[in-house]
Image (cartoon, rainbow, N blue to C red; front, side):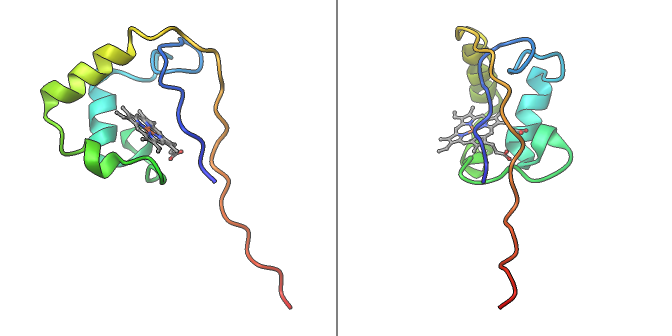
Length: 87
Ligand code: HEM
């Protein structure tokens, strides 16, 4: 079970939290890796489509997202599937 990221520029829980940069955003969208590093970005996030955008388009999206009103919302980590109980 995945939870969509907080894309607002909130500086605690959103895309201006100090961890994210424009470069990290572009690399995450291109690689499909969470924070451009560790685990894969989970469905239904369509990173495979965003990965095909030009650098200019991704930079434009990054800039646009920075103009959104901030929302303080700590999004939970994804919850992995639970193995079925043995019969
Ligand atoms: C222009 C459109 C979009 C942008 C710029 C965008 C951006 C992002 C970013 C930056 C993340 C965090 C990635 C990371 O953890 O490193 C994310 C995660 C996520 N997005 Fe999107 N997104 C877009 C569209 C969508 C759509 C259309 C959906 C669903 C229908 C979606 C669902 C999700 C989900 C579920 C996650 C969390 C995935 C995970 O925890 O691994 N996103 N998105």
